[in-house]
Picture 1 (cartoon, rainbow, N blue to C red):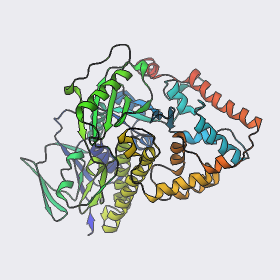
Picture 2 (cartoon, helix red, strand yellow):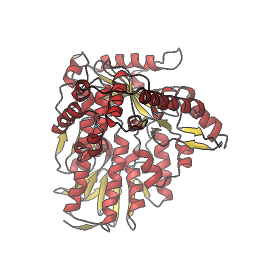
Picture 3 (cartoon, one colour):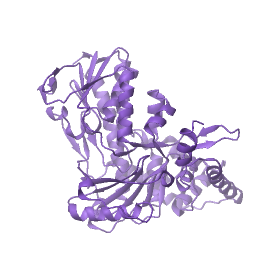
Picture 4 (cartoon, rainbow, N blue to C red):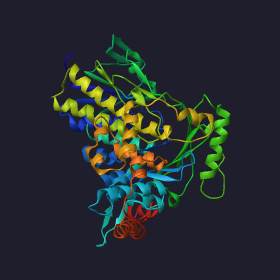
Length: 513
């Protein structure tokens, strides 16, 4: 089936739908883009976490002015995922500049460098990269340079408040010529997998290409016959709540702690502290899970007052981890939660979905908006690779966990792909051998995360490598001294030059300096 795509109708005006519209408008000349949704519905005040590619997407490809974005959306900068307590492991960070620690001080002896890095990750010595120090000292990526000008460390992501972010994207869509239609779709007509038309109570809509961005409602996708691939994660419910928190107490990381039946998140946004509990309803009832969540909320609340969270104030979500095998089926592309979902341990959803939106726009642009089954297959394979890569990386956090409850015992035995086993074997045989990491053979079919990322998480969770444990590596005093200087320099730079969030917003942005 070959089609020329002149107009695209996106159903769903959430963040992913609007980002898809902006991607198509930016990268596909000549295409008409409309977004239809009930825009009168209130956008939830929910915190969202991203990873570092969001910088390139927003301020690079989509050409969104960074200062305007900061002024209107008021993001909080995120430098890492901070595992404050993961099944009893010593606290550790997964930063966006973790490879900088590996590169660290220069040496001609690569084996010496790799073994030093292996020891550092396993011993939790407190040596941090720049991002790690930003989290430890609760700073922002903004700093004063030697000449007095304001500079920015580039390796970071965002924490966003959905209401602010969505409002900003709506304004940007209107400015850039994307039509926003305030309407609610009530019916979908199909012939086999192909969508013929969609209707609201008052109107009928047709397009060359439909995009389902309706989240878990899956308004269009549910009318199509497409197979769903279930992931084995033992989590299917989540609670979410917000509590007050001053800017001075922002933690610039997504903070993770494990509970008896799942794990907790803490995301600091400009407006509040967003908290959640992701758990498995097979092992715990809602009342018990709520009690455990309230205890966590009291633990992480600023100050001495314990916030009272009522049942009515708790948002509750049910979900299934997995994805539709064909994101692009006939004349409809499903994107975001309409296409699939992987539990949010590494905050992949918003950024990964924005990347798939760019992939869709790129395919349409490079082929003058003419698509056939081969191009649909190319897109589907790219999306499939993304989902499977995310699943494998998150699965590593579970299979190497050591929790002692029934939930964690089951979680540590989930099924994984042959790739995860290959990566584990490679770490055992070669460890942080730079030649292996440079060749990166196991990453050939990975998206987002690399073999290095797998190795780092495994090591920080206490896994060992026979390569490093069985061989003797001579560590020169000069190299150790150079390494100590490198890490001390990161600490000093952040301490003496970087602004905290409160200083940036109140001292720089609001004052107009």
